[in-house]
Every structure is written in C-alpha cells, then in structure tokens.
Amino acid sequence: MSQIPEHVVVVGAGLGGLRTVEALRTRGHVGRITLVGAEVHAPYDRPPLSKQILSGTWEPAKATFRDEEALAALDVTMVFGKRAVGLDGTTVALEDGTSITGDAVVLATGVTARTLPGQPAGVVTLRTLDDAIALRGAFDSLSSLLIVGAGFIGAEVAWAAHSKGVRVTVLEALPVPVERALGRQVGALAGRLFTEAGIDLRCDTRITRFVDERTVELSDGSTLAADLVLVGIGSLPDVGWLDGAGLDTTDGVACDADGRVRGASGVWAVGDIAAWWDESRGRFHRNEHWTTTVDQTQVVAAGILGEEPPAPAVPYVWSDQFGMKIQTFGRTDLADEIAQLHGTGLAGGPVKGTVVGYFAAGVLVGAVGFGAPAKLVRYRAMIADGASRETVLAQSDASAAVGG
Image (spheres, rainbow, N blue to C red):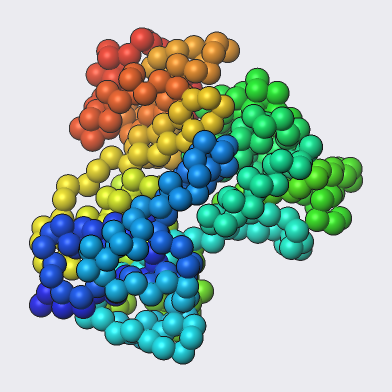
C-alpha cells in the first residue's frame, strides 16, 4: 500500500484485535477504526478463563481489557455481537446482511475449540467467557469430571476442579502430555504433575466413541463415565468465514513474515488465526500464544502505517497449574537435543525447580522452566543471541546433557 489507510477495520475483538487498535493509536493513527466482534462482551483476556476465573479467585469482569467507556477513549467504532461471514477485498460482510469497507483490514478472529467426531451437545469445551462461567458454576454440583486432552487447558481445568474436591480423570492419546511442544522426556515431567497431585492421568488412551454425553468408550472396549465430560484437544483457526475470499487458509491465514496476507491487498492477520512465514522453520506457522499475538500486533500496526517493524521477539508461553508457573521461551520444537540446566526433575527429582534447555545443532533454541522463573529468565537473551551449548551450560547447574 502506497498510502496510509484512513479507515482500518479490525475483525475479531479479542486480544489480537484490541491490541492492534491500541498499537495503531499509540503510533499516531488518527483515522477511523472499526472493531468487529462476534461476542457481545467487551474484549477480554482468555488465559484467566482456565485459571483465575475457573478457580473463583477472579470475577469475570476482572478479565475485561477495556470496558466500553475505555474503548470509546480509543475513538473506535464498536460492532459487537455480529459475526463476520465474508471478505471481499477490504469489505467485511456481517451476519445481519450489512457490510463494512475499510482501506485496510486486520483479521484477528482467532480459533474455535476442536471437537471430536460424534461429540454430544452436553459435552463441554472451554474457549469463551461464557464457557468458563458455566463450567465454574458446574463445579459446585460435580463429584467427577472426565477431561479429554492433557494439554495446558486440560491441565489447568484439572487442577482447578481437583482443588475444589472434584474427582478428575484425564485421557491423553499421546504417551505423555504436551509431547509435541516439550518432547517425550519433558512431557513426562508435565505428566508427573497430574499424578503427584492425585489426578488419574491415562496416557496412550484413545476414545472410540461417545456412548452418551457422560460416557465414553475406550479403544480397549471398556467404558468410562463422569458427571461431566470436557474436551480440551486444541483448537482450529476460525477461517470458515473466509471460504470465498480466495486466500490460503490451509492452516490459518497464510501471511508473509510481517503479517501481510498472501493473495490480498491491504489485508493483514494477527494472532491464532495467522500463519506467518517462519524462516527458521521454512514454512508458514501459527503460534497460538498470548505474547506472540501482542508482538504481532505491533508489527502489523507498523506495516499499516508504513513504519519499520520492531525487532522479532523471543516467543514466550506460560501456564499456571498445580501451584506453579510453567514457562517456555523460544522454539522448543526445533530441538534435536535437550539438557537439564537446573533442578533434578529429569533424574527423578522434584519437578518444581527444573529448567531444561533445548538445542538445535548445538545452539540454544528454547528453554522450559517448572516453577523456576528466576532461573529461567536468564536464557531468554541467550536464545535471542543463539548461544552455544557450552555457553549455556556454563551458566547452568548442569554439566551433562540428557538425550532427547
């Protein structure tokens, strides 16, 4: 685009949409901005849904980023409670038959909860504020909860329910939780958190079918029932509304490394829906994490306004579960070797306090810490600098790698 757009339409009123609006205003954009959201709620933060809100330490209103008065201070036109159903150039069609045309459009509709084939309506997922409120209310009358999926959402819900005295069983199809992100050995550490807390974790366990909304049949022919079943097996990018737009939506919306949507002019994408080109992986990649979304909004705002984008940030992910914070820096999936840097978790010692480094060709590409934020944080700069294995180990409490 050769000119700075006067009217920017942002589709999706979650973290990515709101932070894009804020970044545009902070960078001096004085033109019109329209923020479109499918939900009636003002933009809210999603991580607390499975943490503070579900545990009852926060009331739902505390998760709101900005109420309508604060949004108005951004001089943004709010169109909430209307789902986008189509995109033609820079014109966004809404479900009520109206449309909004901008000089630039930012796609930030995020993801929807993934479901299983034949999943009954009474089986729940956790994605929205309304989901969290309903699930928190259900805890008071539950004696048992069955969770399908031992990822971060499954773990956070399991811990919240267990803390309220609910008997929890968690089914995981892979040999260990979060194996794709952390690898087999470190995933086993995450699995220990379940079992050491007294939660029934069953890995390598697959569901054949739902017998009814409270009962599942497992691959060995046995059945398992609970008062409530929750499916937490990840998410799918919300791209169905873009079917007629002629975009590459194979796994999210394909974008260049600065968030410009391929095959479109004047269109960007941020957050969970966006598959940005990742040079380190040599492919388009979606990174469904809070801090990545925030970083992307700064890049996109700069691009819309014709400014230089900020330097790339080291990816960061966190999860609050089992009384500790699990944190990840970098790109752990690129590693061909791991090393225990602090603690003794990989040797059978306590999980808490363990920090693991992830290396690719002898260079630090990621690090994971279990309840060890002070020790972990030093490795963020090392990841950005591409520190060698020798340099990293010299800053650690370890001297030998554990194969991974």
